[in-house]
Image (cartoon, rainbow over all chains, first blue to last red; front, side):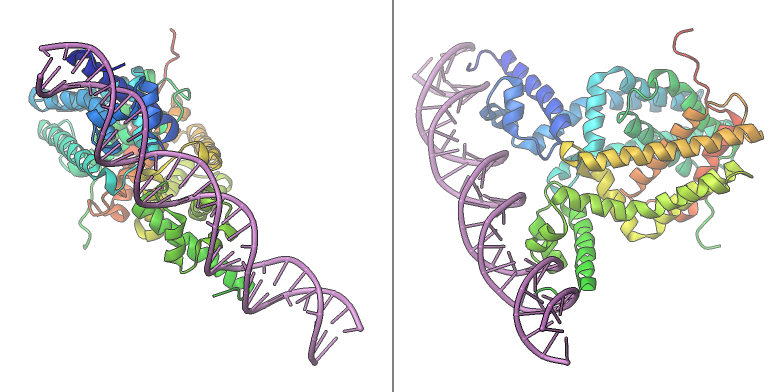
Length: 214
Length: 214
DNA sequence: AAAAGCATACATACATGAATGTAAATTGCG
DNA sequence: CGCAATTTACATTCATGTATGTATGCTTTT
């Protein structure tokens, strides 16, 4: 089958992305042969090289398709957060976990990113983007925590930097481990108590990091 | 250089493990060529094939060398925990983080495991061992939490399963993210407040997972 | 105690297969 | 007709596993 219309070309691209996600998950990114991806998508390797420069670019495209929804959420957060910053943090965390719990593609993507991928030099652009996203996310959340302290929702002694990194680690760990065993517990149900537990810890005994040299 | 004594052979094996850890970290496990590892260790590929069946077995050996100390800690824990189970959990968590904060090799190992490795079929034995270790670890900790509930250290409504998985995720996330940026904060110093924050959350608002269908 | 025999601990050489990137050919749309 | 999209064919590179070589230490024998 050869080319049809411009729309069909986009469909091919999408099929390639979907196929890549699957094969990445099954074989790992590095051991994935582009011929497998092509075959799964019903085309040949040539089609991949037309749409993407190489495997790294394909992988990047796969990742970006998955991170878009989450970034959209974050963008909203920084604006509507005036009233109840802690609730906003809570909602963000819950939405992220819910998204993971409910969407098979999201699960596949995080499975690949967490367990089926090696972040080395050849994926430098992806790593750079990840870093940027993470930094942006962290600073957004820290701002919310700062506001929470200002509102009196958190103790004034709270180290919002640590609180942010702690929450982020918690989220990453929950996703990292849950995708290993989605059967182990119902994430959609447990997300709420899990998040509330951490937030309660923040309120009860916020992290305070004393300067290194006393 | 040819063979010397049995002790020297063990030294070669150790050199190979150390070299492998480095190269795995630099190039990722999959893209690591055994020739690189051999060269770094000052031997040839033949030496590797003598000591290990293939790359997977080499990787497994690298991992096992790193997980031994942690497992030893856990083994102790289940016995001495009668008096103050929560303190035991706290100590375990702190020791794990401290170990990571202070030992370059541990950092390298977790960097490899978290970010430089693809867990696919060819690493099945390693995955199986990881699963077994994690399950054992989780059940140990859950027992401690159960005891903590029995002691009145935690509310009787506490879902110790969720509490355990939450703590585990927290630990994994902290290590996963910190090795990405060891400079971002002093883990040795911050481990205590971070852990205490989560434990406070457990005491203040323990996770309770209601059954799926009311 | 010395020498012979054997297993160990590697090194070297080779054959094989496999994936990649590119270049050329092909086909359908505008 | 010319370009977009995709296929097919090709050359190259590269890591792997294995097979063989070899020298050293270890053991056993006398």
